[in-house]
Length: 443
Ligand code: GAP
Image (cartoon, rainbow, N blue to C red; front, top):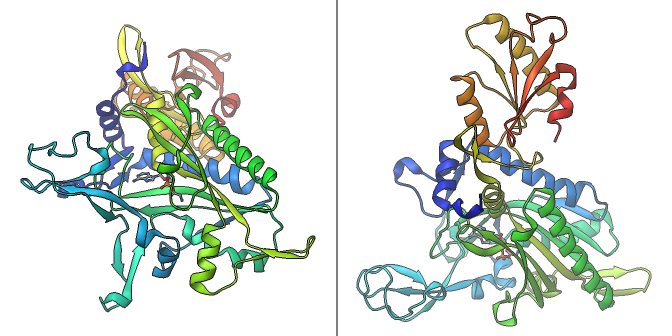
C-alpha cells in the first residue's frame, strides 16, 4: 500500500482515541494552539527528548546541559532583537474582522473566509507579554520566552567561570517556548506553546575553515538523530535558507524539512548566529561576555552555531511516519510502526483469560519481572485477545506477550515457562522462553 492514505484526520483521531494528544482545554471548547499530551504521547515525547539528551549532552564531553527560566528579564529580548523584530505580517478582514497571516494568503486582497476586503498588513509581535509582580505597569512587563536560546546566552559567563571550557563547546537545553502565532494550524505543527531542544555551540571565529566544518558536522549529527528516531530518509529535505528568509541573527541557515501529510514543512533548523547574541547581551547588560584564549593570549567574542529541534514537530513526524494501514488476516488494520527506541510501550503482557487466577498470577509475575528491567511495559487484560492486539497495534507496541495454559505446564514440560510473542509488524507469533524475553524487548 502507498502512504497516500495517511491523512491528518486519521492521525488526529488516532491520537485522541489512544491517548497520545488531546486538544488543550478541550472541555471548555479548546484553546487554539495548545495541546495536551496523554499517557502515550508523554512517553513518546519523553523517549525522543531522552534520546536527544543522551546523544547531544550525556555522551559528549563538549556540551553543558542547562534548564533555564521561562520568564526572563525583558532586556534579554530587547538585546536579542525580539522586541523590535519578532513579528509576522497580520491582516484583518474589514467585514468579518477575522485576522490572518498575510504571508500565508494567496490572495492578499480578499478574505479567505467571507470574501470581504482585507485591510493593510501590519507587523504583529509574536511574544506573549505578561507582568511580573503585583504591579501591572510598563516597568513590570516581561515575556514568555519565544526560544530557549536566550536562557543559554545569558548563562554563557556562568559556564565559563564554573567550568573553564576550551572552545569549541556547546550549551544545550530542552524546554518550552511560546509564540502568539496569528494562525496556529496543522495539529501540533504550529502551536502557541511548544517545546524546543536547542544547542548553542561556540566556536573560535578566527578559523573560518573549522567554523564551516563544525557547521557541517552539526548538520550531520542532526541527520543522525532523525535516523535514530526512525524517520524515513526519503521524507527528509535539506533547504539552504535564502537571505530574504533568514532570521535577523543568522548569517547562514540550513533548515531540515519533512514530508508531513499536509506538505513539506520545517522540522529542524541550523543557524550560524555569529557573535550576534553575545555581542548584543554584552552591550545591553554591560557584562563582558568575551572569551580569553590562553594559547593565543587573545580575548574575543566566540561565534555561535545553533542546531534547533522542535519537539512537537518531531513527535508529529514520528507519528506520521509510523502510521500504517495493512491487510492482516483479511482485515484492514491500523498500526504505528514505531522504531523500538521511541515506542511508548515496548511490550504488553496479557493473561490469555482474565478470569483464571492461575493465569493472571503467572502473567503478573512475568509482567513485574520485565517491568523491573524495562519500565515501559504495559499490562492489558481488557476484552479478548483480538481487541488487545488491535489496541496495542494502534499504540505501536512492538511485541505482545501472552501467558496461557502451556506456560503453566499444562501442555507438557517442553512448553512450560514459555509464552507466545506476537510481532506487531508481521502479526506472526512464536513460542519464547520467559528467560529469553528481555532480548525481544530491549530498545
Ligand atoms: N532558536 C532558534 C529558533 O527558535 P525557529 O526556526 O524559530 O528557530 C526552531 O524555531 C524550531 O522550533 C523550528 O524548527 C520548529 O521545529 C520549532 N517551532 C517553531 N515555531 C513553532 C510553533 N509555532 N509550533 C511548534 N514548533 C515550532
